Length: 394
Image 1 (cartoon, helix red, strand yellow):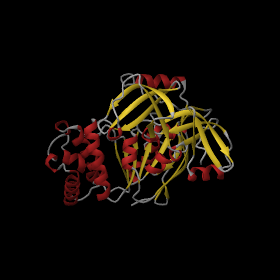
Image 2 (spheres, rainbow, N blue to C red; image 1 turned 180 degrees about the vertical axis):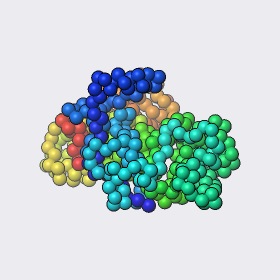
Image 3 (cartoon, one colour; image 1 turned 90 degrees about the horizontal axis):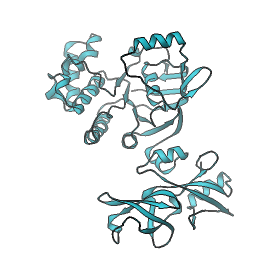
């Protein structure tokens, strides 16, 4: 339906004068205060998004992910037209949209808090935007019932939102968006108000929905599980900047920097102070008394970047560590039984480390205080610069 391009998009919130602050304080005395964190302060004002460039293909599902305050929702709101763009260009289907009114952008947005009209039935909520466009009644009825069938809410069409569960309300909010057949569907943390079971169910529903409607998706979340399962590509943000763009597998297997490595993956990646040693065309990492050779593909990338011997931050995912008879020595602090595996929280040279042990490979139980040894393969080792935090392979 639509290609979307964001070219060096920037968002700056100008400083508010003392008088304006007083006015705003009076106006919003009863409203909860919203705090923005991790934002840069400059002479222009507070910078929420900086140098954001992204090409979204037609019908692609893009997920913006990052911690609170990283600028992902602000970026989505700029695409929607709910926030002014301070710099750069937003292009939808070849047309610059910076100054186009939200209603004329042919986008639809699903909000975190559903934003349904409480006095209207589900049917009327879904039909509302079509009525505003003076769409014929027959066409409205057809579109609403088609969307309700896709989302399995036909039986709730005559109910009001207060009579629905959180998951049902979210389906209605999505239905209200898709009846318009927008070029771009924007979703701002739509599942964050649901419990864990419902979130899993609704994730599956969104995946099915994506197959049934031809539109381009931009989805915002702070939940990396949602990002990994939903996105064709993931945009990882921090402090208003893009850290990495890639498929779920790319950002998991080849994190661009220390932040991405620590943000993507659950449990989080283990980090160690280590030494990277170059011996001719071969590379080794030395940590905790062991020396591990990097895999051939990693050596090729390190050679290409002319990386030399240096202290590094070594990253190894918990699922890529192996308990062995020899290796790095550690003491067990906690053993969490997770069913198919045990998560061992151990202390290795003063650093907390998580090791995932499949229960099928266990030779006995692990008790607090037990001494264990672990190692890892060179193909799963990631080395990051101590100075820049960047992955030395890229």
